[in-house]
Length: 299
Image 1 (cartoon, rainbow, N blue to C red):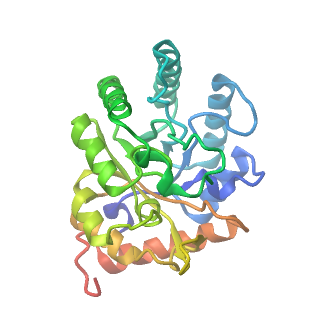
Image 2 (cartoon, rainbow, N blue to C red; image 1 turned 90 degrees about the horizontal axis):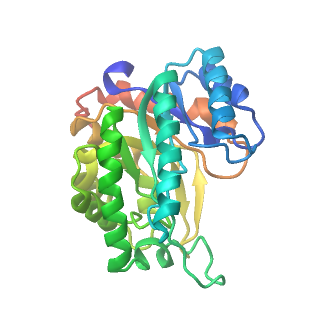
Image 3 (cartoon, rainbow, N blue to C red; image 1 turned 90 degrees about the vertical axis):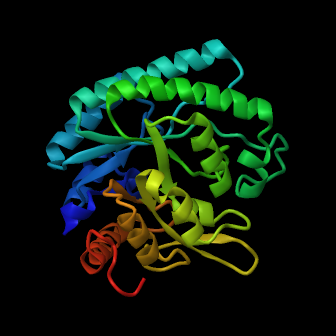
């Protein structure tokens, strides 16, 4: 049942509290994951791209895992300096190309550059004040033009690419994610559907509305959960808890024909590693109960 529903990967953020790459991948394997979504570059150790990729390959080979998704950071498509953008894009493409040759990469989760409110007094977690709330037509034009170029270049990698619905990016809300995909109009780019991110925004859509808009366009599914208080604050939780109904979400994606990769995340505080095996068991229970058609009762 598991393989007919798709591979399940552990996001590296489960292990970003001091674990080495070896420890992270060993933990993922011990928990029963098929693979890991890793970072595009070393965010914490300062390794060069070449040294980081070598370290990834060594850790992956020792782990006996089966697959890799390459995730954030992506490339800042919003920067105004064209030469800086081109340099960053070429460096990223070189990394992706080498990674695909050396690792069993099954997808790329791509982000396009944050758009933060210029007033430093605006808190980063006031997500409704950043991203698409700030984007003007000039930002959209630059973003779409460059994303179309990126899509053309990524087509040579022959891999699914998902642009993540993520806070502080122009593609943060459901409406903005759909607009981005429509305007880019590329068969090489779909959505990294992160329902937790979208539902954590102000005035979020319902889960059925989200599935109707994006299920058929999803290339990667990020699974996370949270509680929202009456005052609007968001606190992350284990996958089976919280406000996101993953039975509904997983069932809807399966009915739309999505077959992975599914990536479980743990972006909150606390002992994230302790959730990794439990969250995977929960997803596998859903697969067993729903089946690959996603049509079991209780939806």
